[in-house]
Image (cartoon, rainbow, N blue to C red; front, side, top):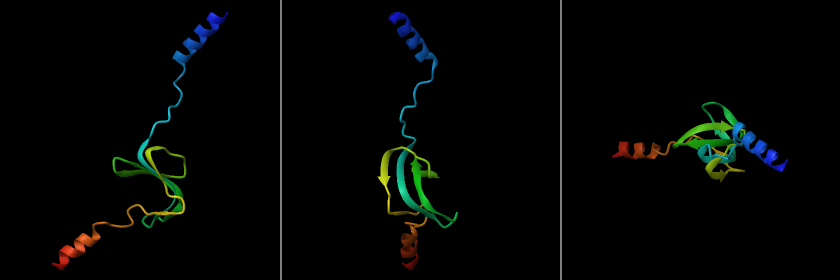
Length: 94
């Protein structure tokens, strides 16, 4: 009887899909920050998923990544600040 149960369990494990392994969907995940995006009018507490140096998701769903940044109490403003703006101004002045 025990052998029959073990064989049945083994065969069943081959047929059923593997359990969801906690895979990292993103390279970096910024969790729980106040996401402000003037272009879309978004202003909410959300999570940001970044993959290959690009924002792939802004969502209130739980997401996972290889690196996690806790942004609770912080403002996350994707694309709001142009880090190259000062370089352009300096170049025009000379």
